[in-house]
Image (cartoon, rainbow, N blue to C red; front, top):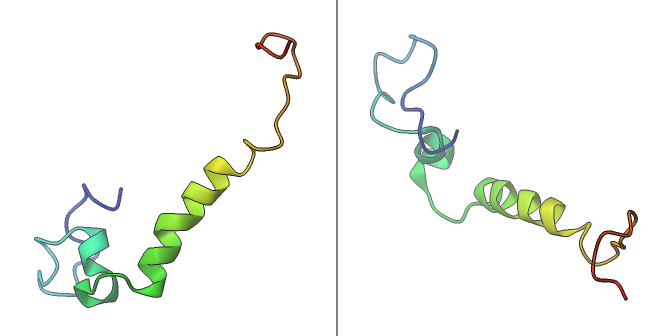
Length: 64
């Protein structure tokens, strides 16, 4: 969503952001801001966090 949709759904900016996607609009286009770091790393951590303690509950894996 951050990289594909261009512009904004509101018409109060007179087309200032029509050629920018949401990721480019955040923080005036600055890179490596705290907001962009948060939106990058939190989904990664949430995806990886269940992996270390997971076990084979159904008995279908190669836990022999």
